[in-house]
Every structure is written in structure tokens, then in C-alpha cells.
Length: 390
Image 1: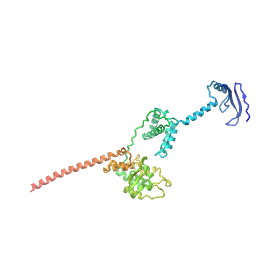
Image 2 (image 1 turned 180 degrees about the horizontal axis):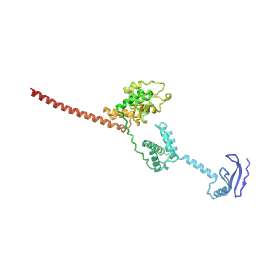
Image 3 (image 1 turned 90 degrees about the vertical axis):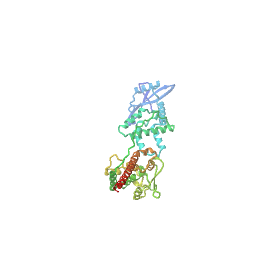
Image 4 (image 1 turned 60 degrees about the horizontal axis):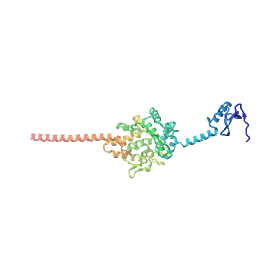
């Protein structure tokens, strides 16, 4: 390809050719500079007339700066750009660590929720930064920002996710960790929901009247067995052992499989559920695993006149636990096993209900003893009266 003739300008070492604009295809001057450095002649593009707003005077200034070493040559600049890109690619930023974390935890419970938290709260602020670049003030500002609109539990979950990602990178020697502790907000998760006999009766009536069979069945199942919502979503027919009278709970809260008794009420309930081609007891659309039923159960909750903050399924798990604990006939260890709690501290929230039952039992014992003593006094009086009569 023949060399295009350069047109000299009045500025030494500055010339141009006439080319076509990359925007509209019209003629446009393209400026070049020529100079010697370290005994070598260099010719480089300075810029386009319109696209780069380049003029002969600007090109002359650019040439002088390159001769003096105040401005990198095009070649050196390209090499610097390549170096920066490679350095950027080798950096284990929090965004890159998150991608790697997901690859290593493909079956992590709540991964979709974590993904939403990362994209919404962590990526905009920290996605392009390495963990060792974070300052306590950065995390404190995120915490304050979240606390203005979000519940303490949400704030804690976001900060806990950040801590998990950072710890993953440090543990696998991908990056340096942070040199400060992420302070978690205090969260009171000990909300224990309960229903009195009237509200419970209203709920059962609302379930019978509602046309959504699965919603009502799942609410009853939570009340009869204390099963979690996710456990019912995952429940398959093969997990129900009618012969031995047990239900297999798969991965309760990410822990090992557990078995709970198939009591008479839950057996009768499951017996009435029509079995389809789906392997699930409570299948979703197309027979696939169900992922949501909030709208249907909230409709029943409203019809029953239950409190607005009552959680239709998890709340009934609390009702189940509360009834057993307050009966005074179930010890905390047994209740822990029925609720598939890994930590006995989780079960202790119901201990006060058992204490109330024990107090009632103790008071009853006192009343019986008092009555027994009263009867003895009466017996003596009766005998005395009989002697006097004689």
C-alpha cells in the first residue's frame, strides 16, 4: 500500500494527511508528529481534526512534551494500557471473589437471595475494590445507609455476606483480608408468634372455606408438624413413610437429613391430598418444585382476621411449638428434635411456656395437698361430732 503524502504545517515536525471522518465520512485532517529520541526517529499520530479537536498548535505542544518525556509515546501508552488491564484482571476484587465464591458453593442455600443482596448493595460500592482497600469507614457508611430503610436483619445479612466473601478470598490465599472487624447490628430474632383458641378456630374455618387446597393443606401441615415452608416445598411422596410413621426432612436449614413423626393429624391430611405424576406432595406449576405460596396463604390469613404481622406458615410453626411447650408434657430436648433445631438455644425461646406449665402443675400440687389437709380436719370434726352425739 503506497505511503500517503504528509502535508507539512508551519510548526516543525507537525504534518497531516486528509482522510475521512469516522463519524460522517467527510474529509478530515489527521495530524502526525515526527521527532527524534535516543537517536531514533519516531513518527506518531497526534489526533483527528474534528473527532479529537486536534490543531497544528496542539500537535506541536504534544510533540514537545513527548520529546521532554512529559508525555508517553503512543507505543508506551499502549504498553501501559496493556499492563493496567493485566494488572486489573489479576486483582481479586470483591466482585471477582463473589464470582469465584459462587462457583465453589453452587448448592448454597439462599444463593439467589445473596445474589440480589450483592447486586443491590455490595457491588455498586465495593465490587471493583480489593478487600484490603476497604476502610472501616466504608463499611460503617454502608451500615448507616442500610439502617435508614432496612430492618436490622437485612443489614446484618448484607454485612455477613460481605464478610463471607472476604473470608473466602483470604482463606484461599487469593487476596489479603481486611485488618478490622465488621461490626454486626444486634438482631432480635426471638419473635414467637402464637394464636389463642378463638383465632385458631377462625383460621381453621377460613382454611375450610378457601378454594386453594394446597395453601390450606400447607398451613395445616405447619400446624400439625411444625415443618418449615421450604421443607414442605421440598417434600416428596417418597419422603413420607406411612408404614413406619415418619417424614424425612431433607436438608433442614442446610443441615443433615432429619426424621419427624408422622402423627395422626398429618397422616390424615396427607391421605386426602391427591397424588399426581409429580414427585412432590405440594407441587408447583407443571409438577415442579414449588417456590412460593405467599399470596394464597396471606389471603387465608386475612380472611381469618389474624394480625397483619403474623407469618402464615412460619407463624404456625411457632404455634405448634408453643402448644407443645405449654402443655407441660414435652421436654425441651424432645421439642428440639421435633423442630429439627441444630442448636438447643433456638428451642429455648419456648422454655418460658414450659415454665408456666410447670408453675401451674406446682400450684395444682399445692392445692391438692391443701385440700388433703382440709379433708383430714373435716374427718376429725366429723368423728368428734359423732362421739358427742352418742
